[in-house]
Figure 1 (tube, helix red, strand yellow):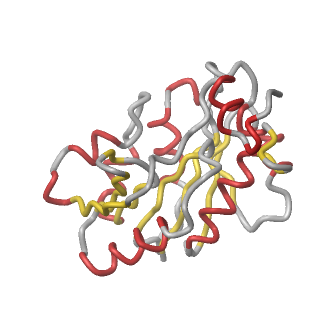
Figure 2 (spheres, one colour; figure 1 turned 60 degrees about the vertical axis):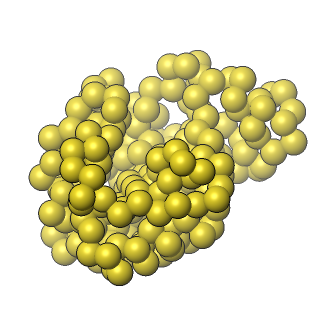
Length: 196
């Protein structure tokens, strides 16, 4: 069983408001991100929530997801990854970790990550967009212990960088999927590029 974990507990400090609830072509950013991961072929999906938890739940109403609460989202992205991995079912063989603030991801990315995992037996599979490593990243269950102890804002980067031999990298001739951190990025990237 391959599970997806979508990180949605961030504090949106640079955006100045709840960025995952911003409108993106008629739907909240977080709903698009979750729908993309579901469509990619994971068997189960967990969304890690923080202080905006109730609003995130409402934005995802009707979608087949479970929620895991990060009690200390201020501890950084690593703490949300740890919470998500802790919430995985015992039968999970791998987890795909995705960002809740990436509303635009090419539909070919996740299926190729899953396919590469089964073909290579590498415990980590990461996409590389025109030479730049990005998200989402898949980790086999043998990596769960390392993910459960993460803290800080580097996410799982340290786990990926620890040993290049255990990472299968997939080259995509695509730009890095944008994540939304500032009002300027949101204004520039949202469909139509119109000011809010």
